[in-house]
Length: 380
Ligand code: UD1
Ligand code: UDP
Image 1 (cartoon, rainbow, N blue to C red):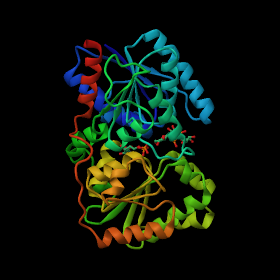
Image 2 (cartoon, protein in one colour):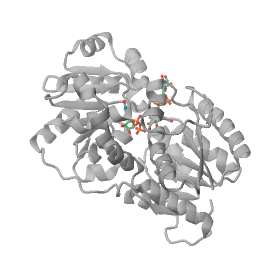
Image 3 (cartoon, rainbow, N blue to C red):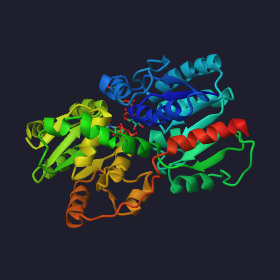
Image 4 (cartoon, rainbow, N blue to C red):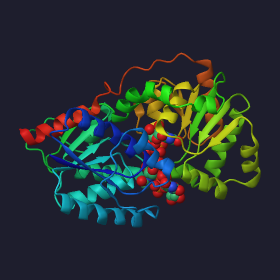
């Protein structure tokens, strides 16, 4: 069986590591994987570093689309992916998450009748001003096999008309929904101990005995709005009076901070001893930072979940989340880009340090589950 896997943005490269590893370890003589990198992310520390570290095979194709407006970027990817699908004639295309690379893969494949496997299906923010919400809805509705990491995701699909008890044959018009656990959890479990051995980031940043908050910011809803980005950075400055803050800066945020923060605020941030602004880190470095953090503050989908995997309270810098379970269990608070909500959430977690993290993300073998279902699709 031949799969074409589409990756492009950082979190997709990381997710693909789990599936490629499972193919290598369990299905090497049954499945051939062709990896297509769209080139959506291209800096070494947003792409290359993950291939080396997570032992992902080098992409068979790289479309090198780079950055552009949504329409231009998606169109270039769609054109490139279509040509590859025609040449490779795969049994399935595998798409992850909700980026423009996901959307391009879905549109290209659906139109030429290549069945789609969507990993991370069913997630919804119910906020269509997010580009990701459009991407994930389109992808889900073009897919044949939908793998949802959470029960909330399965419920969302049911609400949109997906059948849950249908029989074979599964097609784009009779799609199959599976609840399978979270493929990112596979990676966090697999690499957690390796990260401790292989990285020295905690020592390098002199964080050993000191509590710190780990923060990431990259959503366009935060970076592209000066008042929101400023509110987030003002809270980081306030938090840094009590605790160190480590902030690996996404290139989008690095660029837009210069444009959208006033000079005085930029000066304060850069001169603050307790704020460690660093370039994006590798995955192993990131999970080492997550494991040792006192608290995580983020607008990232993946980092929210990793906070939960490593049993860390999380302040979500958004007004809603697709990962509703994390909020429902009390382990994360939606503080949006609101200074006083962020400080209240920080106080709440300081006052209530013992929180419970029931296992809601599966058993760490989501990749094997997905591959079993793909194989049985053909066999049965
Ligand atoms: C994209 C995804 C988002 C995902 C995020 C993960 C879409 C619509 N958005 O957002 O869902 O959460 O990736 O990180 O697909 N840039 C560089 N170097 C790079 C990559 C980007 O400098 O290697 C800069 C460019 O200025 C670019 C900007 O970052 O314009 C945004 O990149 P883009 O891929 O368009 O969106 P992200 O914000 O990264
Ligand atoms: N990540 C990383 N280095 C960083 C920041 C994040 O390796 O400097 C990892 C993080 O551990 C997670 C993934 O990138 O696995 C999340 O990606 P991102 O926040 O870019 O996107 P999202 O998950 O919001 O789509």
